[in-house]
Image 1 (tube, rainbow, N blue to C red):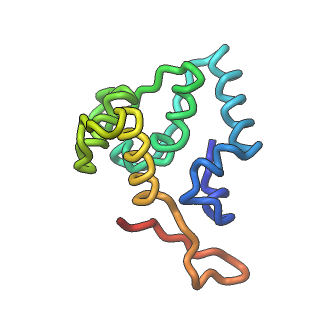
Image 2 (spheres, rainbow, N blue to C red):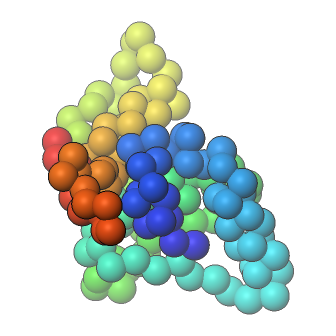
Length: 138
């Protein structure tokens, strides 16, 4: 499932909006169907799974569908999606516990902050024939 086309069409930095699109839903359906016959792996070129839209966008929706998601690191070790999110909370210096917010709200904040960091956005200097895409900066 490649969401780069969505980034080029200006939908990036709006992962919730992207996730509501029919094309994204069809991709999730395809993963569900494929998982009935095969062991699947959704790959990315990012060194750290936290830098990948598959972690911040796709994995959260797969887990909501009941999938067990594990991220493969460059050294071959597996990290559960839950552990990856806890690492993200720590990396973003968010409180592990907060008397004003549930842990689920803290995780939602971590998703939003990381989305802002890693999502691709259109550059204002996009040309008519091609698009110039840059990575969002924190």
